[in-house]
Length: 209
Image 1: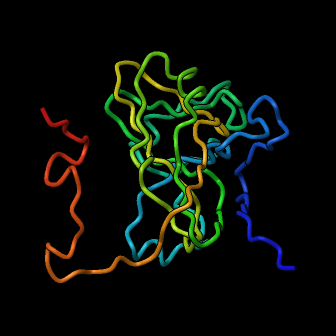
Image 2: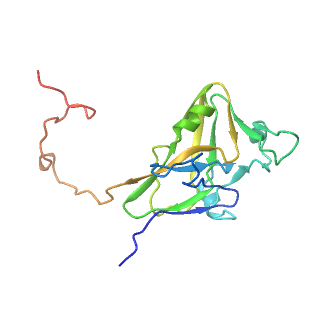
């Protein structure tokens, strides 16, 4: 009997995946898989992606231990206790700013599924009481063939600042079953079936008066 193909997750060096058995971060039966912050990462061009020193890892700008020589990134970093190994070292996301976060894992999902990075609402609510946070790529699907580090694009809508710590559990990986079959292309409008809604708004069915 063939073994069912399940989701596979590989954790990058410096990354961390909370275990389902850890009741402080995730419970058995949760829909999403918790993801934690590995590093602040950079947006790369296609050429930069092809020429990565490590093909699956995104360009690291700040891993909460070392930082790249970029003034914009450095101005947002707060070192604590003059130690690069302090758990209190953090990155400040100011109102109106957005940042790309490497989440330290590579996944392989079965055909017929897509993955999405969604906010972990309870954690973001806890840490973001002074501001509104948006995950800009929350609705962007990851397909089964993607084999690089998962990331999140986080924006602070204000009004307060938001502190990002190493291994902060802010996001979750959610898998959705999808129909990946190709659509049948028809030659004319009349080849489509009729419906009660017809040409009315696609957001609701208008009741006839």
